[in-house]
Length: 179
Image 1: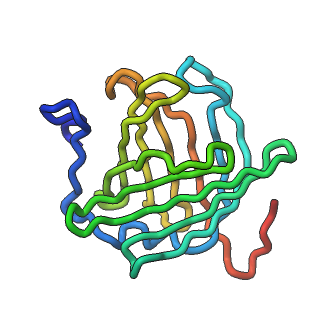
Image 2: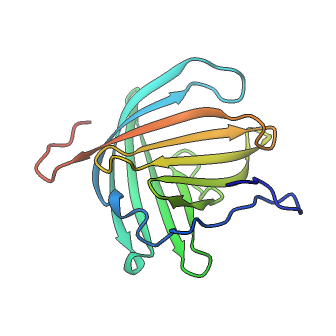
């Protein structure tokens, strides 16, 4: 993406030349996820929390979308989330929605597309009273170990704080789930 904003100061999100409804096909199936997440955000925190989660993704709407579950355990407390991804065939852009068991509402959608093995998705949002731009970055160079990362910018994209990284490992159908 060359310019983050258009002339109206809205996010300038255009699809890549090869954006398609098949961009997330690699993600179908079961996953074990190594998470690395900043303990706090937007305050120069350097302390990370690491934990394992499990996920399962499946296609919906004839391949124009998918949904996945995310299950983790923090100090004996269960945490669940879902992701809904929808591909708009007219705009050739993906919308990614997240909801979790703490807030129980769909977040504003991250909008974007893949260009080859890299996907970038953006949204304006508010984090604890601060207006931010949220960036999701997907790297599917290795489709058996894709990586998702999230960054916040509180200065309209001048600087980014990377605050969450997920490294996925595909689970075989026979592999026992570990919690």
